[in-house]
Image (cartoon, rainbow, N blue to C red; front, side, top):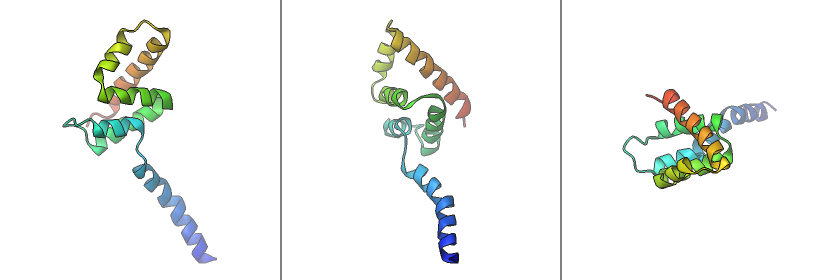
Length: 104
C-alpha cells in the first residue's frame, strides 16, 4: 500500500514536468528549427508559453509557418481579408507580449 502511494505521488509530481519537456508546441519547434543565433531552448520555450496564453492552436500553427517563410507573414499583413486582419491583430498582440515577457 505504501509503495503504491509513493509511486502515485511520484507520478503526480514528475509526469507533468517530463511531459512538458518532451512535447514542444508548434511555436517552440519552429523557433528551435529556425537556425537563428538567438534561438535557444529557454527563449523558444518562453515564446511558446506566451503563445499558449494568447493564441489558440490554429493560430499557433499558422504563426509557426512564419519562422520558415517570413514572406508569408508579409502576405497576411498586407491582406485585406477580414480573417487575416483578425489573425494579424492576435499575432501582433502575441508578439508584443512575447517581446516584453521573454526579454532576457
